Amino acid sequence: MIIEPRTRGFICLTAHPVGCAAHVKQQIEYVKQQGKINGPKKVLVIGASTGFGLASRISAAFGFDASTIGVFFEKEPAPGKTASPGWYNTAAFETEAHAAGLYAKSINGDAFSDEIKQKTIDLIKKDLGQVDLIIYSLASPRRTDPKTGITYQSTLKPIGQVFENKTVDFHTGEVKQVSIEPASEEDVANTIKVMGGEDWELWIDEMKDAGVIAENALTVAYSYIGPKVTEAVYRNGTIGRAKDHLEATVTRINEKLKDLNGLSYVSVNKGLVTQASSAIPVIPLYISLLYKTMKEKGLHEGCIEQIYRLYKDRLYTAGEVPVDEKGRIRIDDWELRDDVQAVVSELWEKTTTENLSELGDLAGYRTDFFNLFGFEIAGVDYAADANEMVDIPGLQ
Ligand code: NAD
Ligand code: NA
Image (tube, rainbow, N blue to C red; front, side, top):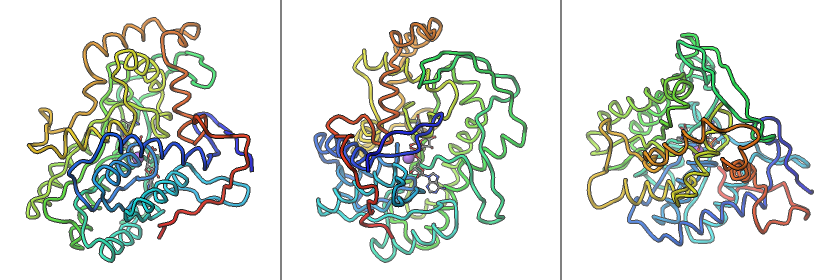
């Protein structure tokens, strides 16, 4: 069928299989051009189908020649209805990995559940024995606690005060004021439940008990800090509390991995257009100003450049892993450079609906957004019939 984007707010209801495949191939090509890294050979990625997790899987497979297992939660296709983009991304990734002689299998289901953890552990035992890198890259608006069956919703709210600032509707380019009421204590607790470190630790507990974590293994989860303008709603808001919890989980996991000589890290990544970040108020406007500034300075990176650099210059150097005073890996270093932030905050003050396309990279934001769903990728013929019924070759 002919597949076109159908957007509703910050989501797109359709995805293009050929476009998603082309997008994945671009990322694979990037890694191949950068060259091999001496890294782990058996890698589990939780949240492997889009964004930073997909980039983590691609960089491990094509950078380390690693066998990879990917876990994600994606909608499969039905006749006349497209799958969600992570489905098509994974189908394309596995096809390319298998063609390169690499092991790649996937599990589609709720990573927060006991069942999917067990299924993953069984697959590792059967095929790989153990893994030596575990990437935790989930982004979800809700989580059901497997022990109690209670479902928690995360929120994006300031704490203790109303948040008022600019935001943009990136479809129309309209810059307007947004006002967000402060979170309740329950909102804070719920957001920590969903996006904090509890589930990461559960994965490690259960995998360790099952003996599927190798000696000297690393596990890495992703965090964000961002600029002053988003601080009240992001880092000092509900999601920031969850990130604080995630970062504090490092100490707990390190204790548990001690006898295996394993270590855990949080990597603070750059703000980028993903399905998760487009849902956050204010962030799209900030990102379009950031893109403009970083592209002008030749510092712009996407998910694949970020994760390749994480592996090459942070995790798998010959020496120690460089971290900040709080023990975190920083690959948001270029985003938070003083000269970058000085320009962005100057632009922030000046930005209006009328001048945004000139001051900011709204076009770049939009292109990246549509690319997430396989649209607006150069070289793809969108007028041609595309088969929506694509299989993931290594799906379990
Ligand atoms: P994303 O939406 O692109 O990816 C989320 C992944 O999680 C997908 O693979 C999805 O299938 C999977 N997933 C969601 N719910 C699931 C569930 N219940 N079970 C199994 N899989 C599930 O998001 P992203 O932006 O790549 O975010 C990944 C991490 O990176 C998050 O912790 C996020 O906070 C962090 N991060 C993002 C940014 C950014 O700007 N996008 C910046 C820094 C850090
Ligand atoms: Na991800």
